[in-house]
Amino acid sequence: MYKNISLSSKAQGLILVPIHSETTGKSPLWPKSARAHDGCQNAVRAGTFMAEAGATCTVGTTHMLVGLGPVEGFSTDRMRTVGAKVGRALDKISSSSIAIDNSASWGSDAAAKRAMGGAFAEGISLGTWRFDALDGTATKREARKAQLTLWADDAAVRDGFAHGLIIADGVNTARRIGATPPNIANPAWIAAESKKIARDGKMKVRVIDYAQARKLGMGGLTSVGQGSAIKPCIVVIEWTPRKISARNKSDHLVLVGKTVTYDTGGYSLKVNNGMKGMKYDKCGGAAVMGAMQTIAALKVPMRVTGILAVAENMVSNDSYRPDDIIKLHNGITVEVTNTDAEGRLVLADALSWACDTMKPSAIVDIATLTGGVGVALGHFCAGYFCNQPNLAKQVEDSATSTGELVWRLPLWPAHQEFMRSQHADILNSNPLRAAHPIQGAAFLSYFVKPEIPWAHLDIAAMATAESANEVTGGGPTGWGVRLLVDMVEQRS
Ligand SMILES: [Zn+2]
Image 1 (spheres, rainbow, N blue to C red):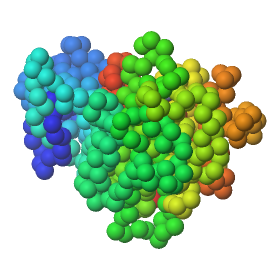
Image 2: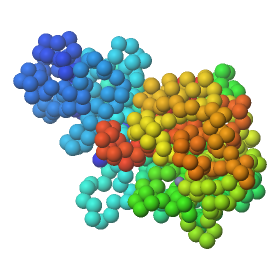
Image 3: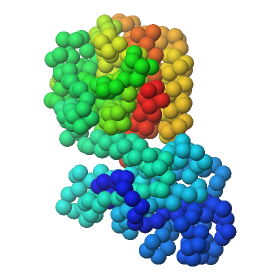
Image 4: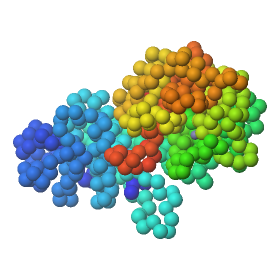
């Protein structure tokens, strides 16, 4: 497994020959390096290589044919999958450097070539990553130590490689944080990891601890986290570039991530087996951490702040309970009906605090908020909500260009009314199970100033994948890093 994947300084190593499935002996689709190469020609002529997307075939020791699938429907999404499969194939033969012949099929202009190069490099890096920090003595697989370098003759493709590798690093950071188990990844660990990311990216970081959060009136965050021995906190990571372009002077995007390091459900206990996998309840925050790492690495010329609402939802003598009425940062009182609807409580304080102190020009929050979003939309896309058309368009444009797809759900005054409580201002969850993902968004909307453009991404069904996911395989996907980074890049 590759420990490090980087751009090469020259053409060297195995020559990769990507071809579409329509490519025949004399086809103009043949890349230069393979036009007169008997081995490559023969493999295609003999029908031993059909060039399905991601299929590979080594020819001697010098060339590897790579299938791109049919010309029709060829896209960066497919290229990312191709990259992942090629990465796994290279890993099997312990290849350490590759030079890609993009002379035939990687797009007609520089922008297309850059995008294809980016998707390919993302695929290689995401497809060969694995979580091995906790491999013990019974694990026989080799430790990651190999290096892989990439080259392409075309400068735009190389530029895409460099960009794609930085993005994939951020996604893999989010995956590593997601995979880290709750006996290690508690709120203090998240704060420490955030400090490392901030230091590496030359970003400012600060932590609002439990005592300060109580003083600030963050009754949601502190109630959810009070049952844990490791107390909750808010982590703020700030990227301020040296050079801010004129058009970005007043722009300040704030990203808020739900970072529940473990969710037992609290006293509203989860059913048997419902708790397994709840370490992934921090994946919204992990996506923000990965995005901040990437934004700093890309030196994006605009201000971006990442805020993590970090808590562990545990059962103990000190835990909050159903029927508790608590007051949140903006003074709104909340009747707790369900201690398992905790994500919205920690996020609400972070959102309200961000609105008050950060002067955001837009806020995007990302959270594994409701199981209901998976019931509504499956694992095909995230559900999202937005209070402003321009921001909604940005979310959708970035979803399309990164392949991290979203579908907008409604948020109406009737939904907000549905959250009203008899003895407090609002409920954290309406006992009627109707419209659960919308209830989450409706609750959060009470904590965002209406004049601030705000989008809420519910990624509960996207943060992890069954093994069916061709790019990342099973486990944490790092979903949202690519989307958030693309939004920032498009704005800047
Ligand atoms: Zn929960």
